[in-house]
Each structure stands twice: as C-alpha cells, then as structure tokens.
Image (cartoon, rainbow, N blue to C red; front, top):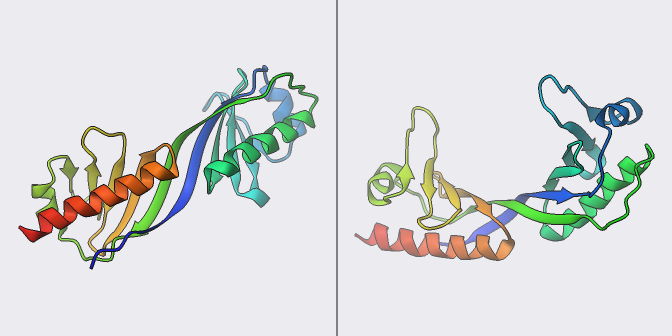
Length: 181
C-alpha cells in the first residue's frame, strides 16, 4: 500500500540586499566566516545555532541554506543582515528574497525494483555501481527524484511545499500504473 510521507529537509533561497558588502572587512571582523577569494568569490557566513549557512557576495547578493520552511527563509535573511550590521553595513531597502530550491525526503511505503523502473520511466537514470538510487527527472518539470529500493525518496527542484506535494502525488500515481503492468 503506497503512502506519501515526506518532510522538508532544506530550503535554499537567494536574496538581494541592495548594498555592496566589503567581504575582506566582514571576514576580519566576524569570527563565524570563511573567505578565500582565490578559491571562491563569496564569503561563507555560518550561523551554527540556527543551522544556517549563507554565501555572501560583494554585490550584496546572498544564498541561504539550512532553513526547513519557506517561512524561515525571511528570518534567515534577517539574521544574516543582523550579522552584517555588526560591521557597520547599513541597509536602506527591504531585501528581495526568492526561494530557489526546496528539498524533501520521504517514504512511499513500497519496495521498488529500480532496474525495472529504469526501463519503464523514460527520464530515469540508474547506475547502481556509481550511486544506489535511481535518478528520475519528472518530464516537463524542474523537479528531480532520487528513488531507492527501500521506497525512500528525495525530491529536489521544487520552489515551494505545494509543488513537493503535487510532485509526490504524481510520482505515486505513475509508480502505481507502472507496477501494475
């Protein structure tokens, strides 16, 4: 019997803070940062207590990871701004925030024959010697699933929780059809 259990694991969002950020100065004054411009042009800001990591660029654009809901994204951006205020950066505009990717994990409650599915799902890739899961790109969508023989799944590429739910519902319908044959 199929089930549709899942939980949001990570929400990745980008934001424009509308201000230039002196990364060298920030890295010298804030202990929770890493900045090696020879390797990567952004500064890594870790808010460990909150489980948030932000990539901060000199243009004022940031990428935040580690939140568990769309609602937490705005709070995460505010926390990053709070850290940047500590080194004298002033903000005059509200940031533009956009969710880029929602990652969910779950269990559909059925064992899956990944070899069989690899042949029956047109947009699937399965290379068990390289990775134990089947990669299924949902046709005409930006969503990708990792399917495992145990019935566990990972869904990535969604922009919100509603898209995750719809994608999992559609996946289960597709799998029911395929597995009946």
